[in-house]
Image 1 (spheres, rainbow, N blue to C red):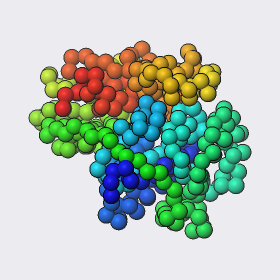
Image 2 (tube, rainbow, N blue to C red):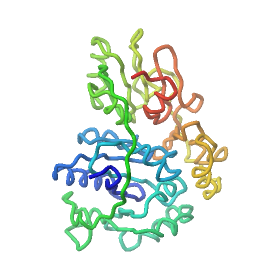
Image 3 (cartoon, rainbow, N blue to C red):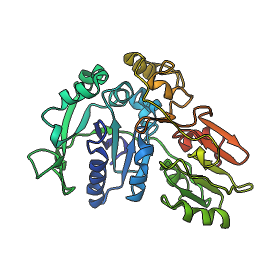
Length: 348
């Protein structure tokens, strides 16, 4: 099969509807057929990547800049896979709509309890998202019902985590073009970090979320690079720092005094249609949101949020999105290794 004929399955919905569960089950289904599968997410990947890594899945984050066109998207889709699965969170908002706009066929994931009242639920709980409701539905939509008590006559996931009617899932075709560099360096890592590091450094050793176990080798072993991933515990402090070995840190609070700031969720002040147009037409890094708006968190040169949209915390607002102190590189957001290489912070 030529690269241009590769199938991509887009799963889209709001939070807590079962997208990640469906994606993992779909990955296992294709994997059982001898296929190599790439699982991809939008910038929400930082909250689920650990789940994918624990399930031995190949995981990638598709950045906002990839939504400018299908050709731009394909530059961020890794070569060498038989099937592709992409999760899109909040597809009815301006950023989610930018992702969805690239595709013709979408699998909309909805929990069983909301299957008959989905539009009303979205309208009542997230009224601003209705701005892109019609735009989302103006394409081939296949509903995937999750958390069903027993099998129904349409694509679904039952409460025993069994996937039914996979043949009815819809898909698009793409021509993947991304090829990551390879390195034989010895890398140790802990916590959540972009899964692309696995491709770049095949010798990477991941300690899961066992920071204490990681610390022993962090102090005692020889390695070429260490990755301090993120976790929800902002109280973790690391008293040790290698003298010269480079360290990439996705949890700045491990080494700096300022912790994440818990705050009230900012309001949506900016024009949502304008945000969408900016993503599609303006240079990456152009401000997306007004000051004090929820979307202000994306106002940096990578369009990477440093506000935790799900836990209402701002990641070290006084620090740059990317900075370096001695041999420590601080990522104050989900900075992909491609950006670190581009900016000269990561040598392969």
